[in-house]
Length: 430
Image 1 (cartoon, rainbow, N blue to C red):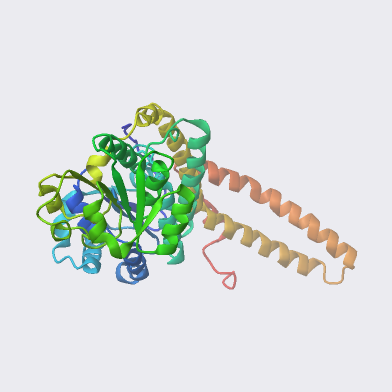
Image 2 (image 1 turned 30 degrees about the vertical axis):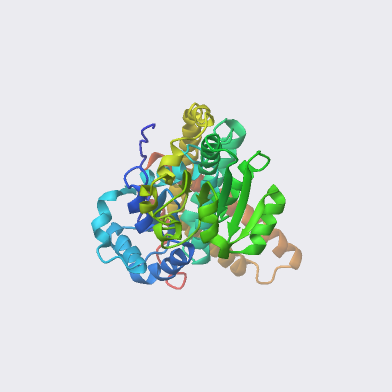
């Protein structure tokens, strides 16, 4: 991974920060404890502003990571972890702090770029992360926690993602968690005579597995809580359907079971299978939290794969994607540089606005004083002429302010303009 060198950036609403728990430091049994579902994320976003006085926050939770991005002058990582713990019913949530990484300012911005574009995914370039980030951003916006800074940052990331698709091979090839799972299914099926494959749960990952297995010679059946959703996908992929109520019989009948069911506790355990298992059986658990009890893997004749083991088996497309990483990192650096320029200019925007208002006030006062008895034609001419003059007067200070931003010395020029035009006083005081 290319080392990111942060550049000084003007502060917005405190420092931009990120706290991240991911597969790089936390095994699956830890990630499933901290993992947050959609309802919990929305609940936290609904309260975090009042509890921690945050005005910008974004929460991302996937099978590989749980992350919170926020703007605050002081580090609130511990408080955020405790808030997650309260929502999850974890009494000692701060005990997991060592599994988290913490970033601030440009390092947090860079991390969000890398996560969003797939550089930090277990399967490099996994496309599913893009949709997950977009949903997280939408939830933040719905909760009124996406201010100008976060809005601009996210749209810069989305534009960079388009550049990655258009200018690199980073998204080429079928490499993702779902594709890796489908590849594993094919490899395992080759060891079984007339293998029967069952896919439990057709969320984003489960549905993608179905699509990857569609058209193969395998006998694949879908089992999902929502019958209508299963019927629609079965029609699309030409697969069979099994009622969710028949889960116990199906688990014992099928040879390969892939589960991506969203559940706070395992739906497949040793009781469901039985201590005595006839023949060989393979389970693949793509869920976080896990939907298959780890003890299932200890049953004689049963082999259980979790999501961390699946991602190690991604296709050769990953190697091709890795060759494009330097190009992707260059795109990120360019985007962050442009974003930083905008971020710095945001600091001088209030001064520019005040200066424009001050000049406009002077213009209007002089127009009123000198054109009391003027004809409509003269008043119209004076309006156009005076506006043209004030626009020319303000042009150079604005250019100089923006140039000073890039040099990092805008504060002295802001002070000069404030003193010259008395910008800090209210119109009535003037």
